Image (cartoon, rainbow, N blue to C red):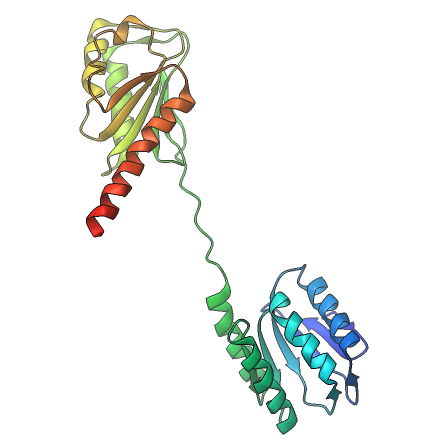
Length: 268
C-alpha cells in the first residue's frame, strides 16, 4: 500500500476506493496546509470527487482560517467525509462544518475506522451513477440476397446486396429473420434498395404486402428506383420513400417521439 505525505497528513487509498487521511500528531493545520491536502486529494482521485476518511485520533489543532478554507473546498473534492476521533473539540468542529455544508457533502464523526468505512460505503451506493447499459446490437444476419440487423436505435434494417437476384423464397427468408429479431415487439423498418439487383414478379407482390406487416410500426424505403416498388401505396402514412438513409432514419424515429408524446398526454 503506497502512502503519500504532506506537512500535516499521510494519505493512502484502500481497496474500496476510499481515500484515507491520517492526521500527523501535534500539527497545527494552517490554511496553506488545507490547500496542500486538497491538491494531494485531487491527485490521488485523478481530479474526481472521492469518499474521504480522516483519522484524527491524535492530538492536533486547526486555525480558524484553515477551517474556513476547508469549508469552501470540501464540496469540490468530496462526496462525503467520515472523521474518526474521540475528541470533544473535533466533534464540535465536525458539527460546525456539517451545518455549513447543508448535506451538499455529508460530514460525519465516528469512534472507529470500521464504522466510518461502513458508512462511506453506504454513501457510495447512493452517489455513484448507475452505468446505463448500451443498447443491444444484434449480429448482422446475411442471406444470399440481403443483410438483416437491428441497430442501436431499435430500427430493423434490410439491405439488398449488389448483384442479387431476389425471388419469393429470399423475401420470405429475410422477412422471417426480421420477425425473429423483432420478437414480440413492433418495430420501425428501413429497407435499403440502393444496390443494383433483379427481382421476380412473385417476390414483388410479397414485398408490397410486407411493407404493411403488422409487426412494423412504419417502413422507410430508401431509393427504390426499380420496378419492384412502382405500385407501392405511397398514400399510406406509415410507408415512405427516401433517397438517403439519414432522412429515412429521422422520419422513422419521429414515430417513436409521437408515441412518447401520446403516452405523456395520457398520463397527464
